[in-house]
Length: 411
Image (cartoon, rainbow, N blue to C red):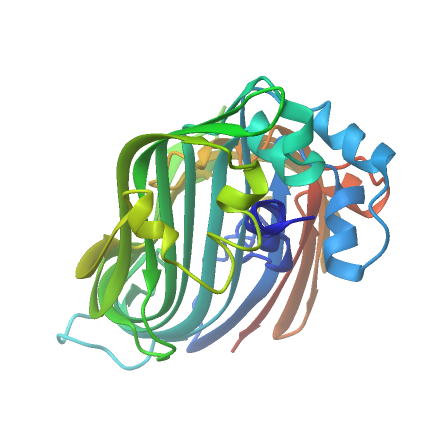
């Protein structure tokens, strides 16, 4: 691949190196009173609406990308497509004995974590240009308008309050933003004539990147909220709804970000596609072509929204007397890249110390998915392992992979 192809392919698929924080493993809602609880969550999830895992795995583990592999993913693409990943690990310590504000039922929470959010909304032409090159579009317009790219890497530490009866909590967090990238390509159209010596380029958009390699790029403040509400559920039975919010807040990038802005149309005669944006120009050693293309470069401090999420749904009751119960919910990220994520599942308890279950879901970075999980309890300890994309472990035609783990200690 030449310059533009390598760049776009990397942009589309580098996200596959990331994984995401556990969110769906049904942690049984335990209303028993404890003095202390400790949780550790880690894991990951990457997937998309159109790219097959067979192609993604070549970027992760290496291997030859054949024409068949490219064709299989390309044929699944629609006009607008999604791809993304979330990654995270987080610990949380709850102390129910030490009361704060002299309120009888309120203990305290200490937490910390590491998170990555990466996502991309892109056109079918962008994928085609990245993997087939411009030769496939001679005499046609390559339209990659509407492409939206978002990436943030951040760490957190928080302190909050927790109710010892309901286990509802709220915490205030401080964030370090260590890396951030965003791209909004409102209009980008390329036309190359049949002979390949005339190129028309129409552009309107903006790209933000960090301007140095410092670990501390910005500081943020946000909230984690977790409320459980009992509701009537059939005759002589109650269930629990959980309202959860994580990393809701804003960050200020005190290290200035480099901003590339463009709103222009150019026609170049006597230049081939690669001469215009190939190895020897835009992505080569010289960036003088930025000026000739009307791309303005500035440095700015930014105030940005953290990539937090909201989730609401029915959760699993740890003390339900039956063996089978349902769970379901809705998850939202404040990003057009991530569509509303709806999930539902069934939890089965074959023994007092074990739970297994399955769920189906639709939305997020892709379409329909199915998952499995198991949760085992041994005295003070429990461990849960889950995937939201079980097909990702068995077929190359799946759209990504998913694996989560959760550890809990209560005493």
